[in-house]
Image 1 (cartoon, rainbow, N blue to C red):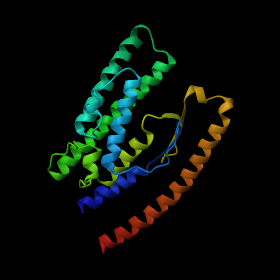
Image 2: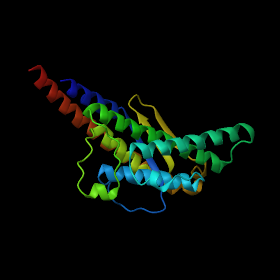
Image 3: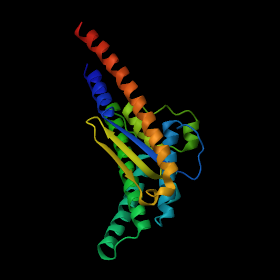
Image 4: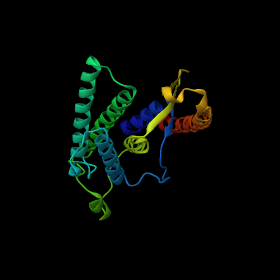
Amino acid sequence: MNSIKEQISTIAHDLMNLEVNTIIKADITGRKMPNPRHALVDIAQKYGMKLAALGFVLNRDDIKLGSFSSFHKIRETARGAIKSLEAKAETKGLSEAEEADFIMLQRIKSMSDQIKGIFNALEKRTGKECKNDFGREDIEKGLSPLRLNGDELVSIRKIWEVGVQEIAIQTVIQMDGDVITRVQPQYACVKNDELHSLHNQAVSTSINFWKELIGIVNDCLKSLLKLVFQ
């Protein structure tokens, strides 16, 4: 019963807001997220490459695994870079490019913390150590899948999907009616009208899907409550 209550609570929380991101990406592979173990390796490598591009290089061995240790080292590197930029901001200020780097570093740090939290929750839930110290060859040999719950799997998928790509426009819609749209300055001009139109279409599509999903969940919960009380 407690498990059912937790699942219902999670579903209700997830349906309380809708987030639509329009991302600028140089290359689109179109592939779906792979096995979560592979996805974690992908994320670690993307973060490592981005940090290197910003001038903060990690040891190659630190990012070849999608492990707790990898994301801890990535997190600490990003934290150090953030402190460096914060110190510069207090004395000289930051350029527009540096402000963008600052936001990216915060994303890398925050998402690495989130992944570490998933590993910790997995250990607590299973009672077994979960460091995920495996490379791609080990994964391909047939490792058992990570015992992730739905919420954790969705979190990893979103982190994998967004990666280190630039979010040009973001709209967040709350159940209470609040709508917040954020636009990066370089995309807030008339010449980007087509991008705004594309984003608006995505928002409309998401709202329609959201309404249908809420209706389905509402019907399912009504049926579940009837069964429970019977």
